[in-house]
Image 1 (cartoon, one colour):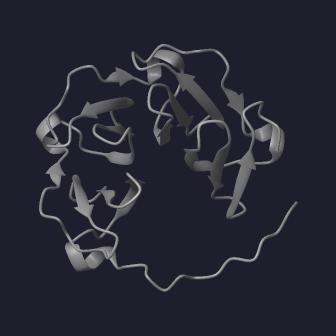
Image 2: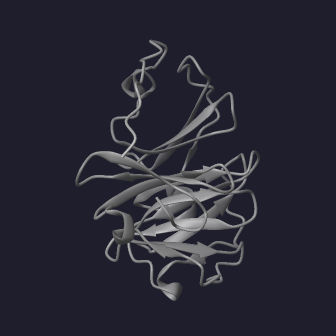
Amino acid sequence: MLFRSWTNQSDGFSTSAFGATSPYGITTNGSDFWIVDLNDDFVYHVNSSGDNQGDGFSTSAFDSDAPYSITTNGSDFWITDVNDDFVYHVNSSGDNQTDGFSTSAFGATSPYGITTNGSDFWIIGNFDNFIYHVNSSGDNQTDGFSTLAFGATSPYSITTNGSDFWIVDLTDFFIYHVNSSGDN
């Protein structure tokens, strides 16, 4: 394994300053952040300093009572719900776009993590250690992969740059970097 040296940039921020007490998911457009809070079913929008922008939205407005992770294409958001086994698609105002999809339809129950390259999605199935690749309609693309092949036994969160993936594992508190072929 390659070990890198990481340096705290000292510009992080407390989520409790804007009311998020149980932040489970985060996404960025490169400058601002949207943070999903599981306890209050809310998506907070903050700038890079952690200042609340005041235009967040409630996930309960579209019946999501267990929002867990979030991703964006820069304008819209997709939010996983671990109780509903569903991915909700909402616009920047938090309005449900009604083209969300069930994750249990392709085998992902309790979807923990989600990421997008702008058109397709990769979703972590909590109970099977598998990364599902689905299109924007929620159709399985059949080229997903098991995280067990490279040692991740409890994948929790995922992000991509379009070809590579970084997967957070809760068992060993390690971030695995995996290329698009599934090799570590």
